[in-house]
Length: 179
Image 1 (cartoon, rainbow, N blue to C red):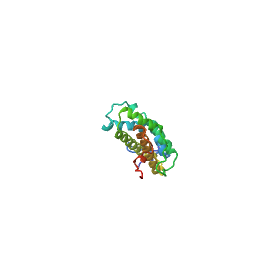
Image 2 (spheres, rainbow, N blue to C red; image 1 turned 90 degrees about the horizontal axis):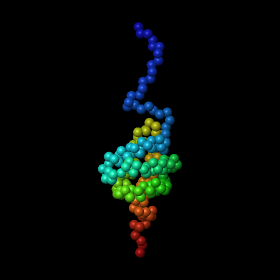
Image 3 (cartoon, rainbow, N blue to C red; image 1 turned 90 degrees about the vertical axis):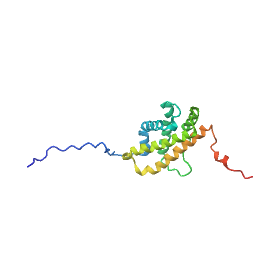
Image 4 (cartoon, rainbow, N blue to C red; image 1 turned 30 degrees about the vertical axis):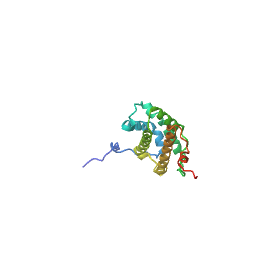
């Protein structure tokens, strides 16, 4: 006969492939704010592995100096919790404008700027994926729409300043006049 167990069994630690579930859920904005340093480091790693972006020899600071403010702008926009209901609800981003001007002086091409922006979106979504257990899914889809809209708006502003201040109404230049 076996004696009854008098000492409670301690719960086992999660295995390495199991992640402890957080007790509270976070918004996309809160996750991006909390993970900003990791997100920027991950983006830098991705850009260093991308041949199209390694044609120029730049320091890490020269590559990433614009990102903290762009991420802050994105987090602020996500904090407004308003799904885009028109072409773009994005606001002006002086950081994006400065980024375009700076990249022009560094010798970037337009294609390199677009590639950087694409990598930023991939990195943002990768960061959210790494934090799925903490994510408030009720806000995910509207926030993904805002992320896409904001990053595209930032790219547009960057490209405008990169191309030496092309007017915001560039579309008007392509419309044929009725003569």
